[in-house]
Structures are given as structure tokens and as C-alpha cells.
Length: 139
Image (tube, rainbow, N blue to C red; front, side, top):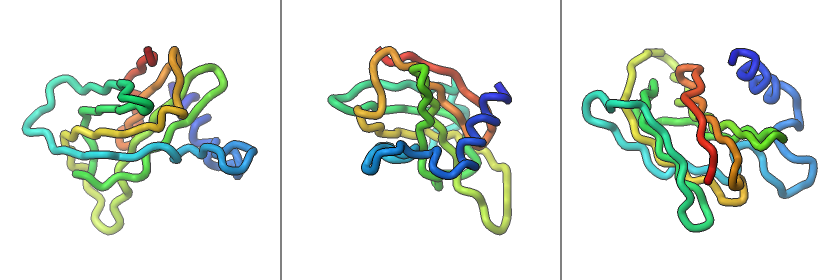
């Protein structure tokens, strides 16, 4: 698991690896948008995430804990050539006072339908905790 995270982080250290070689193609964060962030009341129960196709696009719903209550970096999708991808979500870094308060949130993220394909395995990475929270295969 740690090797996977190290390889993912190395991708950001090498210029040009974060986007395709042709101009006008996908980068890690294009085609992804946080649609809504909702505070959950109390403990959210099971920490879950699911991905569903809605029309041409995919909607990801995440119930998890994050360190900020709605201020996020752009989510990104790290693709591999083996039919796997990792959706990473992380709160924005706090500038002055860094706290580790936990907020139970529901995030809804829209992914352009051209970014994913059927039978592709998608992993969810919670960047605040540095953990992969499971995977799903797109049906």
C-alpha cells in the first residue's frame, strides 16, 4: 500500500507526467468537480463511497471524515494503464493554525463520463488521512 502511495506522489515530482502528451487532453484534475459538500449530523455510521453513472457522467458520493469543513483542493483522478484509477480528495492546507478537527462530511463529485469506462477499477484515496478507503468496479 505504501509503495502505491509513494509511486503516486512521485508522479507529481516529475514534470509533464501529470498530463497526456497531446495538447488538449486530460490532466489529473480536468473533468472533475466537487458539486456539493454537506455536513453530516453526528457520526455518519459506516464510512462509505459509491460511484454511479448518471447520463454520460459519473457521480461519486463520499461519506467520510475530513480535516476541514468544506474547503477542498481540486480532486484528481490518477489513471494507470491497467484499467485502474485512483480518485484522491484532500482538504486545503491550513495556513496559520493547523488543527486536526474531524468533520463528518458528504461530498458529491461529478466526473466527466469520458474519464472512466466500464469494468475499470476505481480506488478512493482520502488525502487527509493518507488512506485508500476501498475500491469499486464500474458496471
